[in-house]
Image: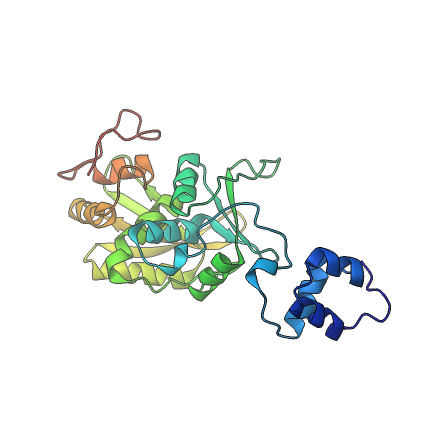
Length: 276
């Protein structure tokens, strides 16, 4: 919408400070509410919450979710580092997961409306959408930004929550052998790979990194843990704070199958009827 003649930024600011409603300001100035908002921001005008010029939030979400460390937050963060995307242009993030049950748990933990993007020809995996500039900023403060696949760092995780975070990482990009004692996580970020290996080494696990090349000659890194005792120790560390739902069922079953408290399930990809 074009601005009406002789309408200056100073006049718009004065109208705003005089508590003229946005609807009326739009009629007077010929500008959209977003254009009025941009004028106020340009001049560093402190906005009144009740008069915010943007569109009202369409979907709810707890915007403080990534500000406070909990085991639920750490698990969601691990899942996002592997299966999440930060929009480059919009104030939104998304989670992609074949196991849609995990997306519903993420939405519940984040107190978010369950908004799933329509599937198309190029994407068959369910995609949970969350719109929030605050959450996007909080993730950026943790080093997680758009186009993160090659450069994502290992966030600064309080030691108490490392197991829950890595459980989320394994749920996202991990592979657990149904037989034997092998688990690995695949990433394109060498920094993330080296930091994860360091954690495994600190936990005293038999672990190592190997490079993998895809058909497109892209280089990936696979962080591996192997050995019966190491498997059991890893299972205890990852699932210590898991509840009955916040984990990938078949990975939980395979990792814990030889422990003293294995997950027991009739259909390990759908539901859990036991508990660690």
